[in-house]
Length: 215
Image 1 (spheres, rainbow, N blue to C red):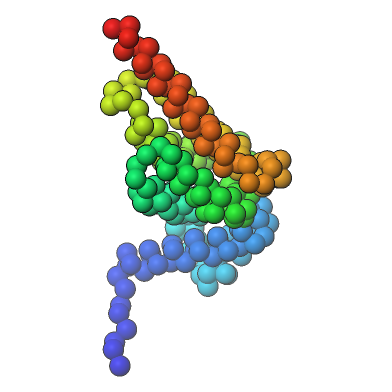
Image 2: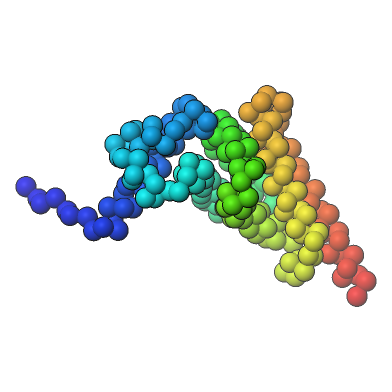
């Protein structure tokens, strides 16, 4: 019988942290953010409340890690889906629509949790800053997606490019909320999202073209 591996302190702490995130995810999704206490999460993970505070300074911080993990997984799947296309805009938009319909809005629990978390940190500038920082990856991913279909010097579009990136992100957030609440007709949100992406690509392309002609 093989000897059980003895974990280093860092490995043990990383394992505890992961177990707490997984326990928090289960309870947050099942019971909601506000109904879930840190004590309940500790019990679910088989850990002490002290172990929770050794890894996370608040319930908001733990919730943010749950959402960050979920978003990272979904963004990785989107990147893989896009990488499997021929690189054309048409196939990429189809890939985004498929990912949106099958990987994102089919699971309401994380979307509801994100809304609950967002509301909870509105009066906490420090936590709100953490949330904004965590969202920067989404902004960066959107920027790369748009730039891939524009001329090499498109990054010089400045404010208009940033408007496009945030416009697409805002549309996605609104459509996700609409899906959860039933305001967006079933099966329509992905086509609205891809149309929004196309709109901004066309607007940016026209602006860049006009700038080139003026030189």
